[in-house]
Length: 579
Image (cartoon, rainbow, N blue to C red):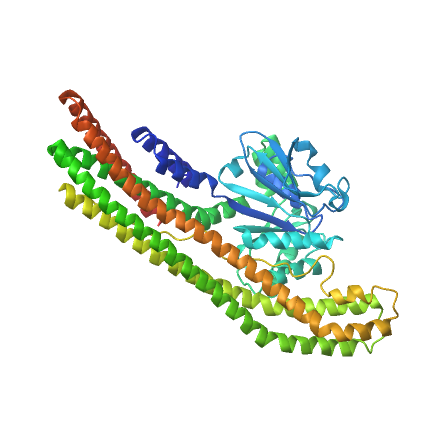
């Protein structure tokens, strides 16, 4: 099937010729344009991650380095012209030349992010990006800079797919395996790419692929693992030189096709159905308006005016009731927050006492061994990290699913109420003006994600108590006695902090989703009301025109009705194909 996005753009432009100055069409186009497919690229330092991104783009854009890059994320989007922008931590922005990107994202030019860069945005006319894909380049995981791994982790829940870049030199490392183990909840979104296949023989390549596949299956607990062997360097060279033979040799086509298929199935189809519904609703509103204008010409101006007044009184009641729906929605969302708080308290009651006990036991066991302060601190920190991850990973996923279902049910209930109200408006208009009108109602799925991420470790070290005792000049035996008294308080503090992060991030996403479907439902109702009221105003105005003007207007209505019915048929066929 031709690119769905292009087809829908064409349909919107055709409808604009028939019904110009339509806010509904502008909103549909904006939805189509603004919905991005976020492709996050992750991988260990020196795996060829940047070269892979450049190969997708067919241009040397993303800087690569023999030294680790900083923790700055580079976000690459479509634009007809090449340009770049730096966003700083104080939210100020600066446009830069694309060639200057490395000054902001490399450790060499921006050590420890002394320039206070938040993100770098790159805009590029790549055909790949034009399809609505936005590539997010993350810092290398497992580098000497631990915060690089944290930044890579933080983008995974908000992406639509992640590409994990590996290479044969060497096969998967412990750092990469640890990374994947920590994010196993997202493995279904991963595409595994084995880069640099040109540095090994065919036999060696098969061996590396099988080794990595078995390791990935074991560590991610996912049997559906596919590895894409490619040479990003060869692919980039082939695209720059337009060499089809070399491009085939690079084997990049397989991963590109898989990503495109995933985009179409997982993201674009949901957006497309939503846009098609909006266009069908617009067409129905216009057809309703045309029918009203045509049929009300049989009434006298006095009769028409009186009926319009009656309909306006009914609409005032409808709008009052719609405001009550928003109040009901807010109350139901507040209930979700309250239930989440109750679940957090249950989690604390069930998990905090055994966690304190475990940490105390580890403390007592390890304090008997001859360890350095750093070894002792690292051990305790690692244990706490492990327990926190174990407790919160499953609970987080469980709560995320529960709340997603609740929000979806609230959405469906309110959508039914609004659809019923739209049918009531159409039926009332049919009754008052004695015209047979049809309502268009629909319910769409939410595209907003409900998943979330919380930073497992603080950058200054998770066990704060050790930072204030062991890292001083106090002898180890004195420091451990002080720390022992604070183990319980420290564990409670850290547990509470993670509860707070989970709650904040999840409630934030619920709020965003709520605002989104509030607007969707309000739009449906308002556009139906506006279409009818606009038609009635035009009908009154038409009654005041001369016979020739009325005849011309009715001919135009007849012509546009036929065109809209044809567009309706095309969109319904497209919707059936996608569905």
